[in-house]
Image (cartoon, rainbow, N blue to C red):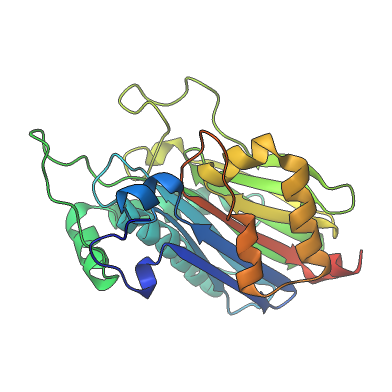
Length: 288
C-alpha cells in the first residue's frame, strides 16, 4: 500500500461510524479500493449523517468522487456533507418531507449543493481536510470536480418507517429485508447507455444536477435501508446473499464500528474501486 503525499484523520483511507438517533440506528464504513492503495491516491468515497431538531428524523448521504476529475475526494466529501446539512436545516425549519413536496425539496437542495462544488470552494475544502491536490499535468487542464451522490431522509412517522431518497449517478439506495435476507432496489443504477457521451461511466454532480431521481417508500420494521457507492454496489450484485446475511447479523447484534468494517473489507476480481455503505434501521426492527 502506498500512502498519499499528505493525510490526516479527515482523509483517512479507512473509516467507520455507528450510533443511535431517536428511533434509528446508523452504521457506516468506507475503505479505499485496491487501485487507490497501490497508486497512493486518496479514498474518493464519502458518507455523512445528521440528526434533526425533530428526533424522529435523520438524514444520510453517500458520495463517490469521479476519479478522472480534479479533487474528486474533496467533491465527494463536500457533496455528502452539504446535502445532509442542507436537508437537516430545512427539516428543522419546515418539518419532515411529505410525498407531495419531496421532489421539489430535493431538487432545491441538490441545486444549492451543486453551487458549492465549484473549484475555488473545493480547494478551500481540500486544504481544511489535509488533502494534497494533484498537480495539473494535462495539456487540456484538469477536468472539473465531479461526484455521484445519493441521500435519504428517514422519518419515523405515524405511517411507519418512511424513506425519502434521491440521487445523481450510479450510487445505490437498497432495502434489505432482514427476515428473508432479500434485497430490493429503491434507487438502482441508471439503465445502460443513459450516461452522457462525455462520461463513459455515470452522471455526476454538479454538471448533471438536472438528472436527479427521487422517490419515496415506507419500509417494514424488519427492513434496513442501505446507501452505497458503486464499488460496494458491484459487490452486492455478485454476492447479495453473503452481504445480506452479514448486514442482517448487524441488525440483530450491533457490533463495534471496527467490526462493521468487514462490510467493505473484501476483495473481488475486477472491482478495485473504493467501497462505502451506510445502513439505517428503525429501532423496532431489532425485535423481529
